[in-house]
Image 1 (cartoon, one colour):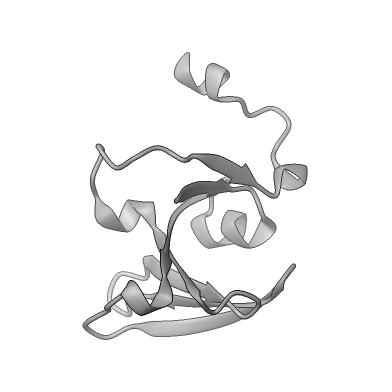
Image 2 (cartoon, rainbow, N blue to C red; image 1 turned 180 degrees about the vertical axis):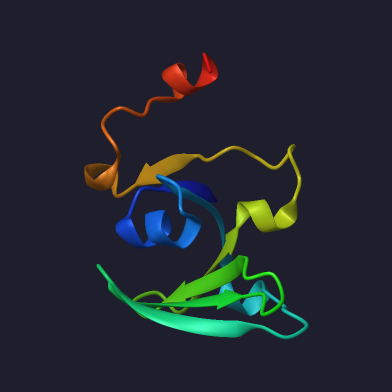
Length: 106
């Protein structure tokens, strides 16, 4: 599932007003190469972010409350044909001036 997240952690992680992630069962995810971690308190426990130590891009993360799910930053795929989000989460943190309709007019 691909989701758009409006939580404050995703806003801080991306430097944007939301983050977009693809969710996978943790046992289905294989990672390779070096990564650095940053753990931050979140609204659902803590989140461990794994990022590239060379460029600093967040690649994937796991929430302590849901260790069976690995979230992968959609931007890490560098694929403009990647499926669009199927749902949004933490809508109570969404910036009220943002709508997809308004963004499509930019």
